[in-house]
Amino acid sequence: MKRRELLLGLALALAPWLTLTQAGSAPATATVFGRPPPRIKRVFAAGAPAGVLACVLAPDTLLGWPMPLSTEARGWLPPVARSLPFVGRLAGRGTTMPVETLLQLQPDLILDAGSLDATYVSTARKVAQQTGLPYVLTGGLLAQLPAQLREIGRLLGRATRGETLATHAEQLLAQAARVRAALPASARPGVYLGRGADGLETGLDGSLNMEIIAAAGGRNVAAAAGQGGLARVSLEQVLAWNPDVILTQDPAFAARARRDPAWRALSAVRNGRVHCAPTLPFGWLDGPPGVNRLIGLPWLLARLHREPARVRALPATVSAFYRLFYGIELTATQRDRLLGEEG
Image (cartoon, rainbow, N blue to C red; front, side):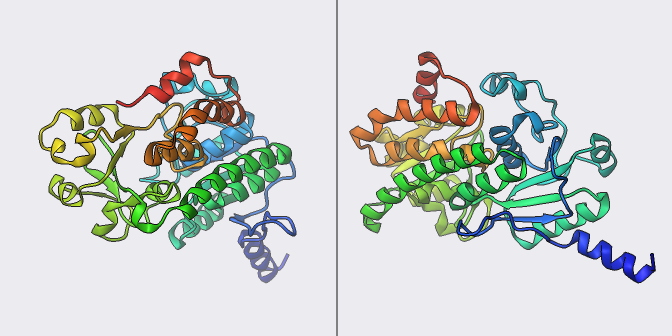
């Protein structure tokens, strides 16, 4: 083959060549570099959201977890996913997967989910060029999750399961949309998300981690600090914002906020509106910002707006989600533990 023909063939092979959406459905969220094989048996998840996505769609294809998982968290997963090793990641805060090790794993596909900005697209293209492995990058905004489940379900040969999960995701998103539509802007509670042990890491305006708060009809008070991703703030800033509700996924911080005189200066604390979201097997608000957040929507609607009917429906909603997405049947004790975790 002539050199020119060889270079042209390589360029075509590494260009985004495939959209994964069928005619008449939602716009594609995924970009594909390289050509995936007809049957995919081995998936390397580039980051935590992709790991959760592969787990709920086709756990038998996942080569390992891109993030460490506790023994307790593993107990809430499908049996085939519980014993998978921690293998490292390509995406997120720092790469922990050398290219040589990635090649030794012999994946059929690298799957990534989350931001589609130029940095992540460039990383996907670069890894595909370096390794010769097909790399799929799919959008991870809440509104994109139904399309994400359908597209990746079809790609992994699990179209029926992808359609079932996508339909459920659409129902949860539609419930939240109806609540938002009925709320005037002035009635949306101001919400502060406190991350970490001291609660002083939060998400700014536009952060993927804060998306669920707006989707549930809340108002991110930290948007006053500007746009961006996660950021450190001071207690003085939180006091000035004086949120109506404080959310966290850290029970230690929730307990500290309730007893610390400085935090008790906030009306949210004095009014008993510090809520700690469940984190098993994955966070309901973020951690990671993947399809695991979908069950956080009905929980957050019940916490933010406190409608009795929505609160009463929550146990059945949680059981249905865990049965459908994680393939486990919650016992009454497990379900009550999830819904009783207020820190």
